[in-house]
Image 1 (cartoon, rainbow, N blue to C red):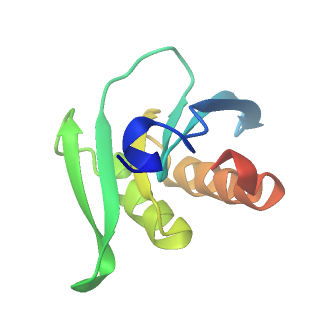
Image 2: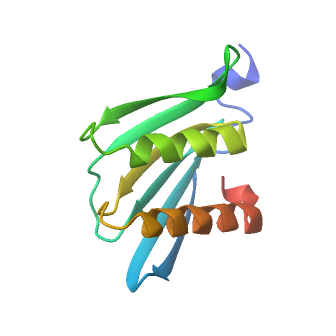
Length: 124
């Protein structure tokens, strides 16, 4: 049995939380680093209303992405997970639980995630 199969060399799950006031709204970020990827939850209230997953493919330059649960008309979790998978080259799970009322909010949230990725890459 290899080290990967018996769990040796697996660092476990690490958790990283941060918050930011963006456009007069406190936005919370929860990152769980997994083996080979990470889970990112973004929201203002504790709710898991959707979940998307993305991963790189050798057949396409854009990562594959699918919505696991939630409203298919809300494309925010899919597109965010896809962009993060492309940037990090990892499997990415995203739950985006913010109202889609302001496109500026989405852009500012994504910029905050990218800033955290640069400051603390060990958490992703």
